Image: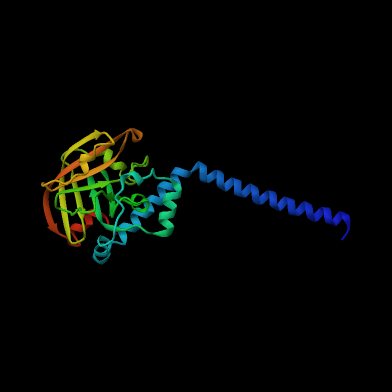
Length: 232
């Protein structure tokens, strides 16, 4: 090989390397620019997948598992977290939540793990039972409407909250909506009265939205009344 040919080959390799690096940098740039949009899209996929795969058998199996209920370990949702959730698919759905007036349809997840919180609303105590005492759920507030607990901001007193374990449907009527301190842990405490408590961030995480509803009706689940949850 002549010196001229050698230089030409080296030049070609260098050009290829520069192009590959440029493509990688372009892809990284696009991910950074559209980080939130991609994250929100993945979360919506997580929600839909968990809802559409719900069965009575899966709910029963997941209810027997051990959830994570350490509030201090709950992190702000990020791109890496939702990506891991989609890849590993470790979320444990134990039911579904619907507030039709604000277009809120989510899986109810066991505990407050990263995967649970990147998929739906997480139960806040290990002893919770639908239709009994205080059924408390926490969820991330997202800037995109319709994702996780962001629609809760638009909820109003008098609107209905539906919960189901696919065996029964529990219908609650909202009687309280207010901003509270992040340290208002009393909202998680159990109660004698059957209520639902929904909590998410407000004011960029400075405060929390707290929504509560009284149980007004319990129905046996059927294909017809389960349609309110948009499971399929």
